[in-house]
Amino acid sequence: FCFHLVLDALYMDEMVKSIRNWMKSPAGSGLVTEEPQNTYDNLKNIEDVYILIVEGFLLYNYEPLNELWNRRYFLTLPYEECKRRRSTRVYQPADTPGYFDGHVWPMYLKYKNELEENASNVVYLDGTKSQEELLSCVYSDIMQELEKLRE
Image (cartoon, rainbow, N blue to C red; front, side, top):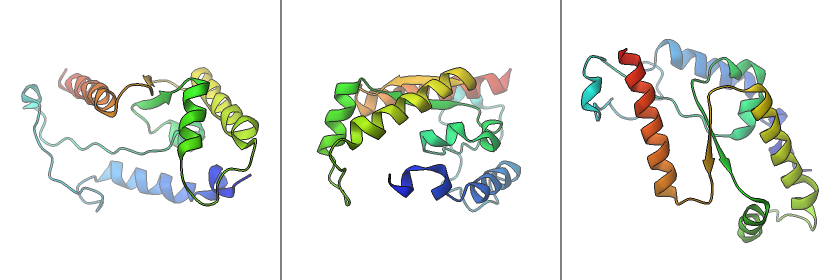
């Protein structure tokens, strides 16, 4: 199977180190690309709020990172829709015949089950919804979490 689909292909120790450094000093990390904006009037008592978004659902199963996540978002898709989307992707190298059924879908189910059994603070999102609906859901959830900081 493709090397790039496993955690060993990533520099996990460096990622953990970078995230921990960011948590200590978000403004000085070099990762902040925009000034914090107070887009939520009820958060006026909080001076600066920094949000780091780390993408990649396989990262949720990496133990050293588990203690760092405040929130996890996991897109769910039914088998047929997932297979349809995968089959329309154009990339090199292309999937070999049977790769989706033999590897992609079983691994999706494996990681999803592990997440359900072992992880907390997971928000499952319906991947059949539009990008706008998904972004709105995530934004609302983040705003609710920020509101909790005020309490």
